[in-house]
Length: 341
Image (cartoon, rainbow, N blue to C red; front, side):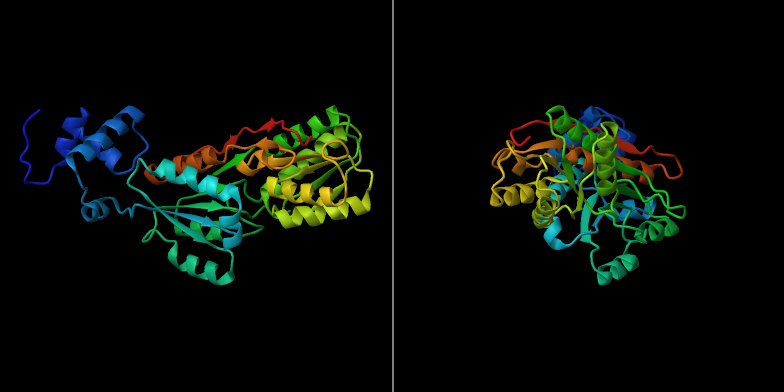
């Protein structure tokens, strides 16, 4: 390796030489491409760190027409975003996947109409290279607006299935399969009056978890007992109270989120119902809090951090290879049996 002058900035060629790769490979790593091996990426990033190489982003932007900014748009309130573990886990997965690239994350919320108006003005190719959309409700217009502007976008969760819905690639969990596995577990343990507390009907996760619950009970010719929730702890408590009022003899509750299950546990305790002796409870998320409830919560594990990382990977392919098809991703779920049911 040639000896370099320490008084001048290192060049891309010197980074490539130190990493033992070609100039093109070094350039792809520095420019955030996912089309390189993990070994090459690690070697180039180590060389960048050793040499103190700083890319000329202004010059790169002129050539590539890229901003190196990816937006994560969450259609929830600040209370939900910062109060529910799901969102923190997903953001961790997104930032981890972006850490080995040149791209920066812009996190923004689109809960109020004023937020949506500002976002509609801002989310263009002049400001961002692509968008990750999370927690969409109903017929949200944002996917269609992004598609009309040619902005690459990936959905966290399946899109609405209306005929005029814009088709965007998505990364989702096996929500229906996870819910069905939870209910089958309850039935196999002798529960025969199995209720559910659903997520929002205008979200795919809420709808699919209800479908899984319904399919499992229909398969055993057992009646449905449904109460609506919105994934929050308070809605779980209110729904559990309503279920007890409707059917005092219920012996199990499948909750479409751990937060709602925590609320249900509190309400069952207040009503003098023992868990799991009188009523079994199963949640969905496998959030950190599920290990520390009393009793510890049986729940459906979903790989939330992996979901965030796969969303970044899918978006990277859309940015780097426009026009090429990308596959939707459905991640597996599995039941974690603890002491609540």
